[in-house]
Amino acid sequence: MPSYARNFASAGFLDPKVLGRIGNLELLARTVVDGFINGLHRAPYLGMSIDFAEHRSYNPGDDIRRVDWKLYARTDRYYVKEFEADTNANFMAVLDVSRSMSYTGSGIPKLDYARFLAACLMYFSREQRDRVGLATFDADIVDYVPPSAKHLEVILHTLNRIEAAKGQRGELAPALVRVADRLRRRGIIALISDFYEEPDAIMEAVKPLRARGHDLMVFHLLDPTEIEFPFTDATNFRELETGERTPVVPENMRVRYRELVQEHIAALTQKFSQNRVDYAMFNTGMPLDYALFTFLSARERLNRVR
Image (cartoon, rainbow, N blue to C red; front, side, top):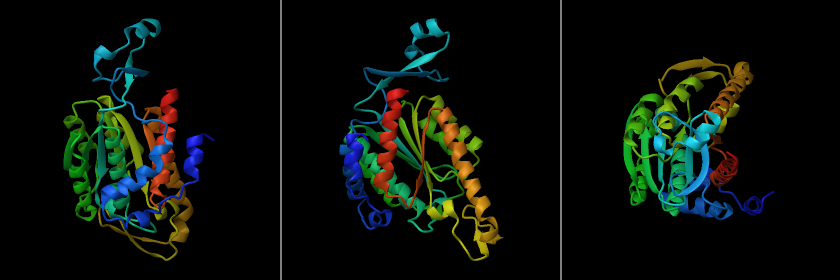
């Protein structure tokens, strides 16, 4: 086990419900980030600078000045040069605030976990001297804060006042098209949602972001009860997005429900991996500092071998 992993493994992790009692988002983010930032060797992000990092396949919309023509001559395929950014990257959190994000079972509301996650990523990026921005969406963009080195306080204020229950039904595609249109400069995007759409529709929705060369990280949030379906009493279940009620006998469908959830997660894992997108499913009962450390350290290792 690497030394940084051993060091972090000995730390005490913060239960999400404990984090929920911290009223100040900046304090919360500092508490979480300071717990794992010393364990990472370096910033696990890729952006633009003078230091070459890797090649990736050319995507429509990429700057042709960054095509490696020598590599094209050897392989007859188009590859774009990627560069490693230590500072001054654009980091954007794109956060789902649709009605389904208000759900809470045995953990904290998914939206609270999402707000905590976004705040931590913002704080972490600001510590790297990146420009930070935020977009929230349901069926369209709800709030938009453009990336800036001075916008952390505005973003934290925006995250504080989010209310999912007032949102509409979620729809990724139209919102992400509008986000992509506003982001002229290639950067790093953290997409945070519960992804209650079919995997093919989700992949189609993120295409505009990938086509513009953004480095995309995807965080899939699910409450523990959405994964395990531990309910015992027959009752009417209400679909949060539509309000539709369905009579359900949990014992009769628990096994098949769990299979469908795991199939959905597996399909997203495979499709995002095939498109070189870093994807992680976060159980909202999981300590946020542990989840973030696991994701970011894995991302660091992947970026070394890609």
